[in-house]
Length: 548
Picture: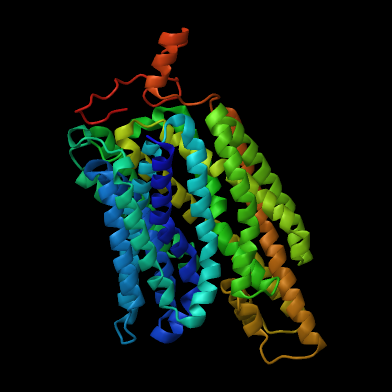
């Protein structure tokens, strides 16, 4: 395939996934406007954000399998069209009594569309590039998608000044561009013949994994609202875990499973997913915590808080390109080990500076943390995909992205609880010393922890030196709480470093035909690397369902 054709495929798929990454962050910024115009309840406001993430997490594995069965290009176009339609309907939400149910429903549809779309788009990029070029290509793909996540708060700040509906309508022209580019690139998009694709979908497995992931993520997301000891939180998590265990037992019994769990017998694939999980505990929640810190502790506007994220992505994007080249030349281990170490150091040094309440003293540590994440995310995701047979790229993408979203949910729940607990304790102590009644101090602490504007609103109408001192002290308390969160992130990345050093094998993953050619031409080994999930299993025939 010509380089220009492969690049067209890459650009088309970046446009295809652009909407879903922007929507991960853009909507949260507009929730106050939505709440005012639609008279949303507090629970309804949260479900506008959580409903999307819940559907995305629950359906990723199923979406990946559908991609392999029905074809990647078809599922990309279907996912883009469904995402655009549901976005338009979100933007058309009526202001009558059904408005809350309407927008939550179509946000869930958006998440389901994204779960269909992303595995197919990533599988197309992987199939378009040979193994030796995937690192660089996917570095661009993940850099662009990560950067689009940061664009969300910035774009949302400007669009909501016009109308909150525009944050949904903007997806429609993006979708149109994505579909046009995908059609133009159709001849360059490799597709397996229909008789070489998996022919059956495991319906029971799809129900078990979707329900299990959905309930587990629901419990984790709602823990900060319901409380960790609430029966609804415990029940959701326990039932979710039981259903996932039932899913594993079922998948190991049937001949044509939804997810081929044998792939986890590969130490390399397993450690790729462990590192990806740990990275996601820090990476996705970082957007939320950085935005809160910038607004509460530094007093920035929501729009400027979005600009704050660009420093992180400056380091991320530059390092991601370097990491992709290292992956192509030497394999995933060097860049993943280095990136985990750099990220751990970056988060720790950043944590030491957050209490200075000065962006000028922090930006280089933010960039270092971003560089560490950039060195890891693309290469570890690509390495996992490189270890899959061609007719299972969608399925394996579904696995890795489920792991990624599950890690993000764990991170948001646990780190969010740490931030809330630390902040409430510090602010209640500060206000208590100043003579503020405990009930009022507790209310202020929760307001500050729950929204960027909480600190300003909590002290509205109060003037004088004493009020100014309390305001400054509350900002400092929030910074100290954020420091704990960053230290935990540093520890998580240190654990990822240990896992990569201890278990990740050296060397590049070779395509089987490349290995055989080298063996015949130069006397090299003709054996597929021992770290490959294919090792020890028969290679799939062209017209057979893939097996690891």
